[in-house]
Amino acid sequence: MKKSHLIGILILSIFLLKCGKKEGPEGKKSLIDLISESAGTNCPAGGYKIVSGIDMNNNNILESTEIQTTKYICNGINGNNSLAALVPEPAGPNCATGGYKINTGIDINNNNVLDANEIQNTQFVCNGLTGSNSLVALVAEPAGTHCANGGYKVNTGTDKNKNGILDTDEVQNTTYICNGNNGLNYLIAVKTEPAGPNCVYGGYNFNTGIDINKNGILDDSEITATEYICNNAPLNEVRIPLDFSGSTTSVEGVSGLAVVNFNKNNYTGLDSVVFTAKLFSGSTNSHTIADLINLTDNVVWDDSRLTSNLPLEQANYAISKNLYKMIPAKTINIGLRIRSEKEGVYSSFYGSTYLILYPKK
Image (cartoon, rainbow, N blue to C red):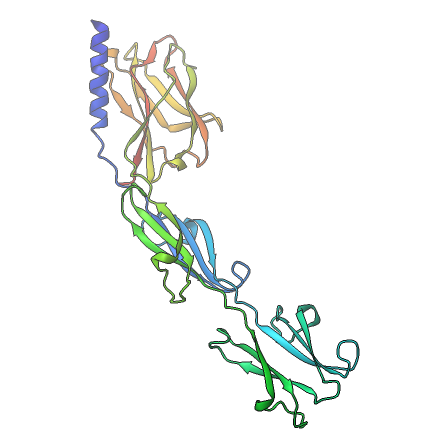
C-alpha cells in the first residue's frame, strides 16, 4: 500500500512539473547564399560559390560566422582556337619542285601562334613538275554554315596565269579548319523547399546542370543533380534522466556518474539548462544537499546546488539556477553528489532526478 502511494505521488509530481513550461519555438533555419565567383584558384573560368549554414541569430542573413559548408560550381573553360600556318617548302623529298607546307593544330596556349608543339597535322601542296606553280590562299572564315565558331578557309589551285596570285577562277579545292566550340556554363537554381518528404521541416533545394541552350536559364531538361538543405526539427523541452540515485548520512556524501557524453551544442536553439530533484532529510535541523559535477574537468557547479530539510512526506521538486553559461561548449561527463549538512543525519533523493533543457523563448 505504501509503495502504491509513493508511485502516485511521483507520477503527479512529474506531471505538474512538466506542465509548468510552455512548448518551445521552432529551431533555427538553414540559410543558403549564392555568390558570383570570379575567375581564380577556385574556378579558372569563374562560376558560383554556394555557402550554407544555420541562422543562429535569427536575422535571416547568413553571417560569415554561421557558414558551415562552402561549395563551388564552376563555368566550363572556353575551347581553344584552331590555327593554320602556311610555310614555303623548298624543293626536296616533300616537293620535288618546291611548294608549300600547311601546318594545322590547336592553339593550346592561346597566343594566336601555332607553336611547334601545337602542330597536329602537316600537308604539302607542291608545285607542278613542268606546269604552273600551285598556290594556297588562307582566308579567315566567319562563324556560319562552314564553321559554327569561325576558323579558316584554305583555297588551293594552280597559278595558270603565273601572276603569283591564286585568282578565283584558279581555285581547285577548298577546305575548312574550324575553331573549337566554346565551353558551356554550369548553372544553379535555388528554390524554397516546403515541408514534405524531401525536408520534413522545410528548407531549400538547388538544382544544377549545364546551360546547353546558352539562354542563361537552367531549364528542367538541363538539370543533372538536385540537393536539399533542410531546416532542423523544432526543439521542445528535453528531460534527461540522471542515472545516479543515492542516500547518505555523511557530510562528505556520495557521488556517481549521472550523464555520459553530454554536449550542449547538440541541441539547436538551447539557452537554458536546469537541474531538478526531490530531496528529503531525516531531521528538519539538517539539510540534504545535492550538486552536479563536471567530472571531465573536476568542477562542482555551485549554481546547480539544491537543498531541503523537509521530511519524506513533504518532499517536493526543487529547481536550480540556469546552468547554460556554466556548462562548457564541449563533450563532458556529468556526475551527481548528495550529502548531509550534519554528520549522521539521513539524506536522500525521492523519485527521479533530471537535467531539463529549454529552447529560447
